[in-house]
Amino acid sequence: MPTSLPPDAPVLVLAAPGSATGVAEEIAAVVRVDNPQIEVRLSSVTDLADNVPSGRDAVVVPLLTWDDPLVMAEIGKAVAASGSGAVVTEALGPHPLLAEALHIRLAERGLARADRVRLLNVGSPVDAVILATVGGERAVHAVQATAVLLASRLTLPVVAASLDSDPAVAFAAQRLRASGAQRLAIAPCLIGHEAAPDIVEQAATAISAGHAAPLGAHSAVAELVARAYGSQLAT
Image (cartoon, rainbow, N blue to C red; front, top):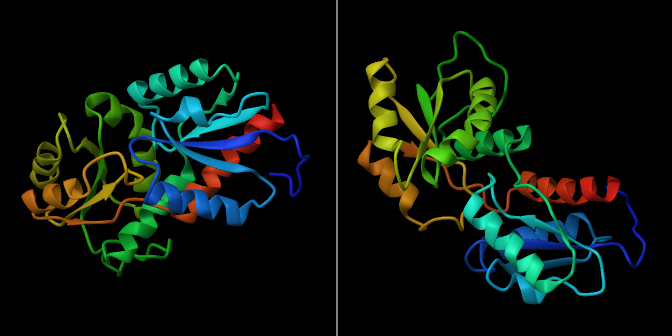
């Protein structure tokens, strides 16, 4: 990301599924602080057509951890309706930065060691991790790469599962426990606005597992937003 941009540089528009409040506002605030040279706008997907600037280039970055086809289609329709010709980037994941943020969120709850040094005589707080997403089988497939990256960081089995449909979290827990992993943790591969606030806690309670907080306004999320914008400047 260049440290300075011309006045007519493209506007960065963050497209949030659901309401453009709460965690979406927090992410926008972090992006603005870290990148004061960028004009940042925030919009819900439903209001996106009215918030993409006309007569000026814009880069729309979806606040998603995977390319949810339903949300991406809505974003595409909104941009087309705006008549702006704005460019829409891919979702923020999969990416090693997401795996890093997921690791940190687990460590904050005491469900992973914060360091990356793996000593044979130091036990892990859990035996395996369920990487939870929403969107069913398509979502599970989309976050598999993130699951592999997280497993590499934790040196533990990581299995992806959907919180809202099959393949379900309970089935993933059953498989892991059948293989000998008794202490489980759920790492939500969610920014936080994609599902009901208590969906992760309910799933964790149902399988007697610990759980981390969603990614939220983690600095890695803001950095991925800036990288998505910067990649469009480069092209």
